[in-house]
Amino acid sequence: DFKHLNTLFWLLTFLCLTTYGSVMPFNYIATGFFTATTLKDMPSIEARKMAGIYMGVPFFIGAIMVPIVGALIDKFGNRTSLALLSGAMCLITFVFFYLMQPLFPLILLGISYSIFAAVIWPSIAISVNDKEKVGLAYGTTTSIQSLGLAINPLIVASLLVGFGSYQFCLLFFTFLGFISMLFGLWLLYENQYNRNSLLDKVKF
Image (tube, one colour):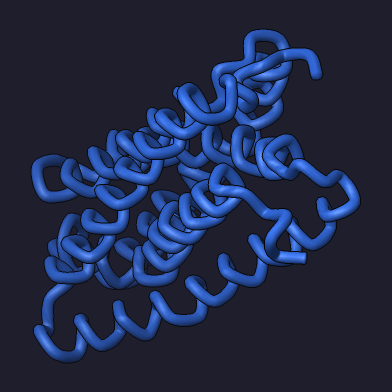
């Protein structure tokens, strides 16, 4: 059955692995990261409260933006360009954490997450040639995504324990953002030149 899953599907799946594999594990360490860096001069309780507010920013943006972006995609298509944009924004977000206060990078992360969530799940169904294999496709993508969400926190924990700093954890997330952008470029090429822009269509 896996022979029916084409290159577009696998690129979307690995995009899911790298993008969700950076956003979700970052959220796991966000409280410690913010209290140890940006909020280190605040009293502990206040720092944790503020860190909790920061952690909610990307998902609050997602709660508002995902249906809006989804409706725009239904109307205008361009899924592969948006997937590439999401990967690039994810990369830029983690670079910005080195350079500025966290609120703007978190807003950017929320926008990137919203675009990606609206793009990825319908694209998987569209990419499958044999529509009887759509369930297999979603199961495979979710399984690989879950594997990443199981392994990446272990990598992050090892980096944090081994180096005693969040900087190497951020470097790992930045690397995942870079890989997401590369997968986005490959997806754009595959879709346009080998699949007749299948993912960018509005009507099927």
